[in-house]
Image 1: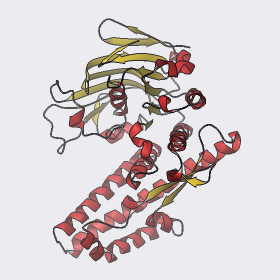
Image 2 (image 1 turned 90 degrees about the vertical axis):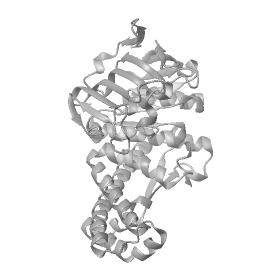
Image 3 (image 1 turned 90 degrees about the horizontal axis):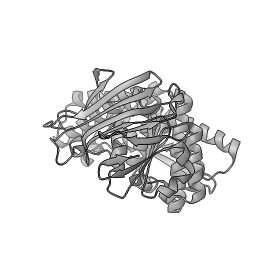
Image 4 (image 1 turned 45 degrees about the vertical axis):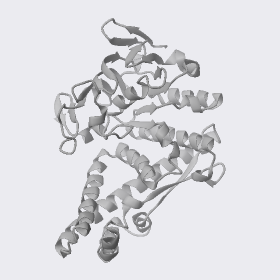
Length: 400
């Protein structure tokens, strides 16, 4: 059923249709944003079908995707400081409120950044079902995957970007992994700070290295599990369907702890890592940073059909491989959760040929996801127009 969007005359856009899927799908049913990026105020009422945002460059399409991404944990799809998200002519803060259909039922989610807040002292506010929560709690309600142009260099860029790509899947599988990720990062920064302060206290280092060994081993194990799950799904899909428009990826993790976990139990790996940190103190002191650990691990990606490292493939091949990985992540989350995640795709259709665009839309419909897609050319979305909510975006305003 095609969703029809209509303006209500009060800044609200309402769509009708597709509500029969409400009980089985994760989707944003209503969205209100205030003083966010170039939006002074906006209200949308939506159904479960895909959402297509069409408009000129700079009109606010990606800004709206970014607002939706903040319904999940983290800093959003662009990872910008919260203070930068507030509208320039506003009061210095922003607010996002949504009614989201989840596996827990209908849930009201609110998040924002208060005017005058110093970001280094406090993050964004989050309310779920009327109760104040930390941003990490959003991961229990809203799972999401996204692809934005800034990720086009994922295979050729820094390993840190590939770790973030993988860790978003780790957190979608187990939101509680946010705790060890945070503990490891804090302990490592404190250890590095001791080097900069020329501190030699054995007790201080031992305490921090104990935390790093425990949290770091948990992180490496969770990443290995995520890669194994994703690889198995990709292999099964390829075996069932053969080569498709999006090449299958072959994945592996490279890192000290990952290698150790392949040979011994986690409790022993903790001891090994603790010893590595202790014996490497003087080397790390000279570098003023920690030179071993999961913060340096890398996700290795091979283009399956070519049996070539992704970094050596053409830009078009890399784009198709990356999109295939994002879709595989969405399918894995669906198989684990029973409901599909939100899929946010910024300016993807314009960089695909017709066959791959149609294949992308077919996958979105097959997975029953509320995909949010942006583009400047409405005609590119004609194959999915009858099954989507198409909204025109113009300088912070939206029309159906």
